Amino acid sequence: MNDIVDAVNAIVWSPALVYLCLGVGLYFSIRTRFAQVRHFFEMIRLMLDGKSSAQGVSPFQALAMSLSGRVGTGNIAGVATAITFGGPGAVFWMWVMAFLGASTAYIESTLAQIYKESVDGQYRGGPAYYIEKGLGTRWYAWIFAVATIVACGLLMPGVQSNSIAAGMNNSFGIDPAVTGAVLVILLGLIIFGGVKRIAKFAEIVVPFMALGYILVACVIVALNIDQLPGVISLIFRSAFGFEPAFGAVIGMAIQWGVKRGVYSNEAGQGTGPHPSAAAEVSHPAKQGLVQAFSVYVDTLFVCSATAFMVLITGAYNVVGTAGEKLHTGIAGMEAGPGYTQQAVESVLPGFGAAFVAIALFFFAFTTIVAYYYIAETNVAYINRKLHRPWAVFLLKIAILAATLYGCVKTATVAWALGDIGVGLMAWLNIVAILILQKPALKALRDYEAQKRAGRDPQFSPLPLDIPNAVFWEKRAAETRDKPQFIEPQLGLPARDPQ
Image 1 (cartoon, rainbow, N blue to C red):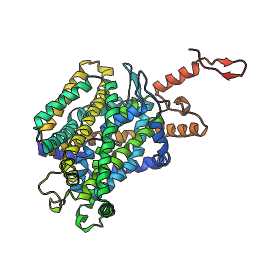
Image 2: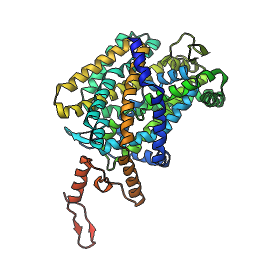
Image 3: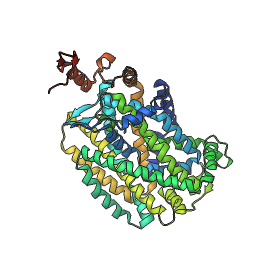
Image 4: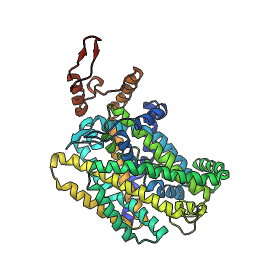
């Protein structure tokens, strides 16, 4: 089984996908004229703007749902794995992936808004929807939907639950099977409550857990501030092969940095567009910019917090391409959450390991919840044609089983299966958004033009020559047909009495 999984993983995550992720991020950064820099403060404003509706969640709730999927075990265990197999230089390539990936996140999330639908009183959207409507290829959309259901419903939850079980076992001696049982109960209570409950849960938990984790990281860095310049220098020297100790893994630094960067921030993977489509906004570009900011939060803030804690305390190992030991900071420890637990514990004894275990629990648990929502959205897409109401219930049982199974299987298999799921989705989605980029770019130009004119941007697809955006066509028509009441004395539009 291990050999089969490793062979498939090697094919999916060939160097071609690594450089495709980097190349696409650079390409979209140029096409959007580096919107991730130009609109940085606009991203923050939009994140706090807007409200939910009967059909959709607020932009902040959609951001929280997206972050709940992005901020997970990849931010703790994934960073440790990247450092082990790619050296400290892998952290630099994670940063590069985040900066370039923010533009990719804008494109895919804006497309999700443009081609979203209202299904059973809720907004639904994502790659399957924009592939069918934008590209007109239903068979490709179905392939993505099925791949996403398998990846998010079966392959990827095990990575998160495995790290939770490992953290709880390391800190509190709790048997993985017991942790699995508790996770299944808690997860069941949330996913059987629908998308609104998922949004409310994410809105409360995600900001709290991320800020708390970053705060602890800042404390550790502050207590070792004299070592910070050396750590930053080590990251840059290792990234370009100028550090003799890690020169043997420079190629692996790029591969593992990009691989774990994509796993962590999910830019281009196709997961972020699902919660993006659920947001209630007046213009698709608004949520696209908000989701671009979420990549910064995930990698530049949370992943960097982990990296600095691990590197500044020396709590990491690095192995060469042939398995040789290049650096041994924690003898005999497998790459994973134990690195971060040891790092925090060494500075804050009696508190560190337990804190990381609890943080990891919330990080990974909210990610599993996000995976369920993403998989459910694709089941809803398929059910438009198959009409199998029992399919959603079957998905819930499957993800609960995958979560339990992940707690008791080895970390190596868990990560390999998760990587296959991420890689499959990334291949399918990146090809789609490369072909279907024009509507998202048109939306950005339209948004910027309306902002320059001093208006709150409103979206109408037909004047922009964007076909098949049925939801927005209907909304624009309703706005045009709405009667205008004129105040005779002033000659100004008055408030609609309705």
